[in-house]
Length: 117
Image (cartoon, rainbow, N blue to C red):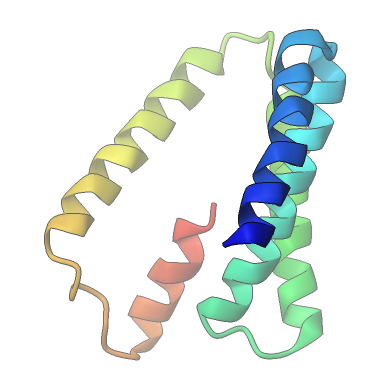
């Protein structure tokens, strides 16, 4: 518990400074890197065993992040926000029956991979 408190005391000012002071591109890169590191861990949790498949999965997500960054000022942005909102509403419904997709079938495996995106 002591280590967690120390970590929080160190990371909290860094996170607040990043949010309040960093230019948008810097903030985007840091948040994107954190997202990709978390996705690397998620890929192992959903059953991707080899490093190559995990790397391909994370690379695909990185390309998608780059594409979204490039389109951030375009007309498709409201559609992207709407799709993200729809996904989170589906995820909320999914949480109501947490045993959904628990069996180790190929379809459930692909669904769990999609949740990382």
